Image 1 (spheres, rainbow, N blue to C red):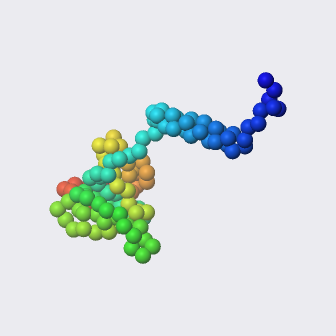
Image 2: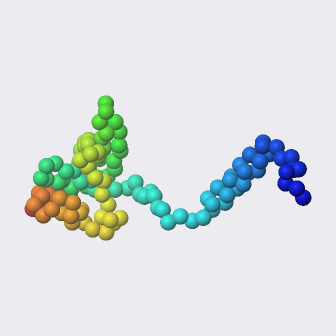
Length: 127
């Protein structure tokens, strides 16, 4: 069989290549990935940072929204008011998910000299 004598249309070659690529792409989707997405949208605490101080807020629920060009969280405090805080200064936090307390997390992030306050819980100030 002489390859030169075969008259294969360029469109046919393109169609075959596209089919092979699509089949490879679709079958590779069945493989399991180790990449996990955090689907926990339930955070019992928020940590708000301000200069040399952090405030741990016990929250019932939260929502994010835009006000003009500001990204904000609306935090519903346990047995308390509803207020907003900047997304850039606030971390939604779950001790259960991270495995360490909020206080330990703050000290790892900012050091031992940071003042820690509480809102919505019955805890004492620590330094």
